[in-house]
Length: 106
Image (cartoon, rainbow, N blue to C red; front, side):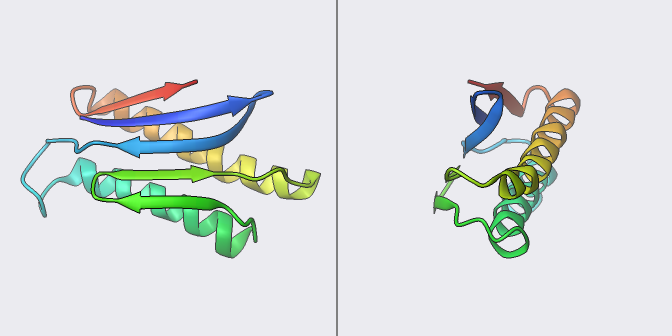
């Protein structure tokens, strides 16, 4: 199972961690894993390259974590759009594939 954890501080997402493998299908054919990976990397790249936010992230096999630094109001608005969109996508995916994706907010 893939677990996606969103950390909130004062109602704002300040970090997320994704770990595990969905186990939906064999590697290379796992549409759940591909969906999770796509939205994770789209969000990280959007934060860095589009919003210009210097996020810190770590990636290794079956694991990605990303931390959002303190931001100006404008930067925070951009980060919120990307991060809340990621959360909404993950919740929808988890609803469709409950045995394979778990989403938590801490």
